[in-house]
Image (cartoon, rainbow, N blue to C red; front, top):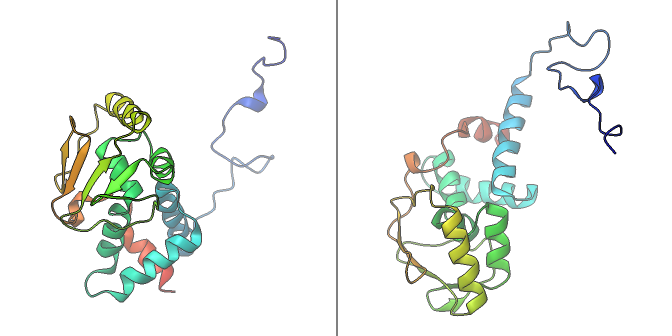
Length: 187
């Protein structure tokens, strides 16, 4: 068994492409490639398809205001993202599944659409089913280190939350250069 997984030179990670010219060849990324990489990073972070992502960008572009900030705000106010931020799920993919399986109630109505956009004043809670409550409680215990953003109010005992206001630009994802994404889609 151990001989099969013995470390070889092929398993080592190298910072250059394969082949004899790999270590010397340094290609500069084009502006298009940099914008594409930034877009893909954000798209994979939120676990969306290209079509969903592009349509959400188009809606943000149609609104008045700074397109990049409105786009990030729209991404953050998706129900699956809000569930992740509240700690009801360990990851955004788990949050998407949690919503899709019907564990969430928004304003008293069962909601199983992950792309549902929450608005100011919406009340989000985990359904009164034992399985739903157990899943949310377990996830909250595992995500103790994550803080709930200021634009959300969490009642951990009742597994309820309220959207106080929409997130501001400094409360959204800041490791992404949104301007590059705006330029990528505006070409």
